[in-house]
Image (cartoon, rainbow, N blue to C red; front, side, top):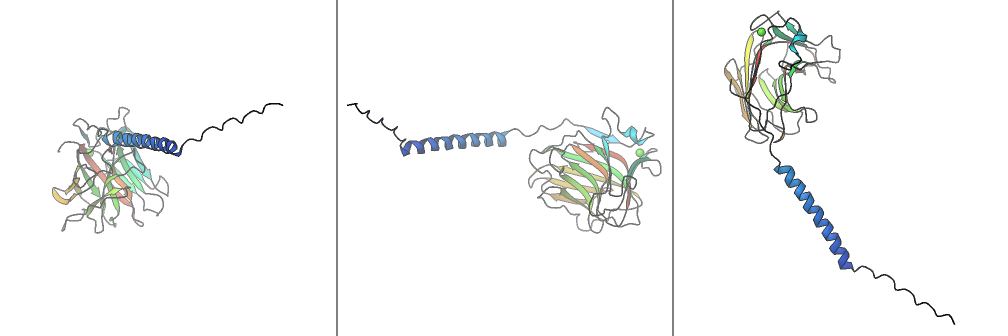
Length: 278
Ligand SMILES: [Ca+2]
């Protein structure tokens, strides 16, 4: 008689408490590493501020608009000329037609907004470095041609090219053609309005616009604007999208003409930008 082979013992099932322990351990390890990653993310140092600098351009010493973009990046880095009706209707050119200083100024012409594609005519300075806690000082002379309604034009943007849609603080003319500011292309933050009784943005004359910003993603941000030495805007609040946002690009000119009916013409001269008081 052939001896029967005893059935081999089935492998012992893992006790339930061991499974729980393993799962719990894995979960804890995951939580700890996620926590550590989060801690390193929030505790990483803020971007370092830039050294003191002053950038000035009165648009002198150049015969052609292209001369404003030397290869050494010492002046401007590009033009933004965009409209639905094609490049012919929007333009940014060096001009002798109207100047505040010397023999040249910048002339920006922007066609009406068709409701789809932005109408822009401005000049850009890149490679900037403004971070949380920094002060931004800007001044320029503007001549806005009259005879049109201008309550939806944007004159100045300071923005971050590393964030989607390049959000940043912008200066525009609100209803009634007084200056105002928004944190453009960002989903929170209030608009800054002109002080009560502020004069309209003047037309058909040179006006000096001066802007001061203290950069913060919190309530301690600040923005002040002067028109020919008269303070026309003074508000506190968010001036930076996030604590680590770096503003690296400034645009000056008709950075947007949101008016649906009217073309706009703006002359710009004697632009100054600094991280120290002007
Ligand atoms: Ca000039």
